[in-house]
Length: 320
Image (cartoon, rainbow, N blue to C red; front, top):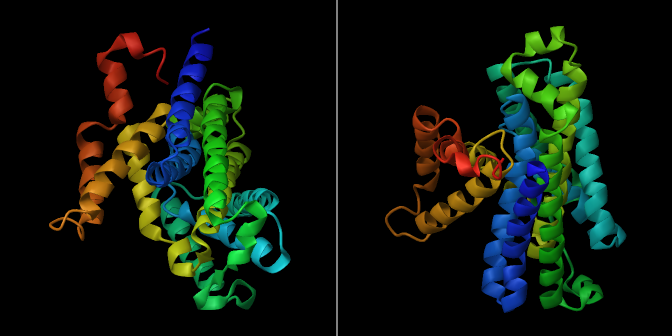
């Protein structure tokens, strides 16, 4: 029963925040919430691997960038609509993660983390030299493409509504994984992988499936982000620092929890927005991200959600 209540609370809060710009009709608020929902989706999808299995993925953004390119290519070159292109991009990045996971998930600890950085840089270099994707200059959508969505202004609202649905789906899947037999296996791997194997957890298959699931959603988010922007370039698509910031969001909110990535993304984006608009700190926001990660590891390794649950038992059953 408490799981049902926690489910509805989580979905209700996220849906309410997502519908806020729609209710007010504010384009400014829509843009702010678009970024927060995008980060919530990226952080929640990363949490499926990092939070539940303990595998640190510094190259999570590779799926965002590659998915963005695949979807953008299908719309730009072949005239696909936004939604089938988005789905195709997500499925493609998930398939890539299945193939990669069978290889790199044999590695553990720092070796796996370094491998994920290498994958991101290798894919970025490939895309920057791949002529069908526009090479180093990328691709741009013809403004007329947005006519099919009621014009550019309406297309922005459509992209936002699609992202809200995707954020809800990502958080819902994260919740389902956490409270499933599959999720228990992943968390057993996180605590002691060798012991989990002895107890019957199919470690390689479980890790690979978690990796593919965590790659599905950023691939779709990438399409929506670059569709909204109207252009895509390698430098914007494969920003390694965004992977690191996403990791900070998960750790800040609380890895291995459903609410952690949501709260972490919202808090970090508010902090990041302040730093970027501050004349004194605008060039130091990445340094603050590194210091914040260090402070979390040293003083609140369970994140904000873990800290709250430890001190206020009354919310322990509702916030997971």
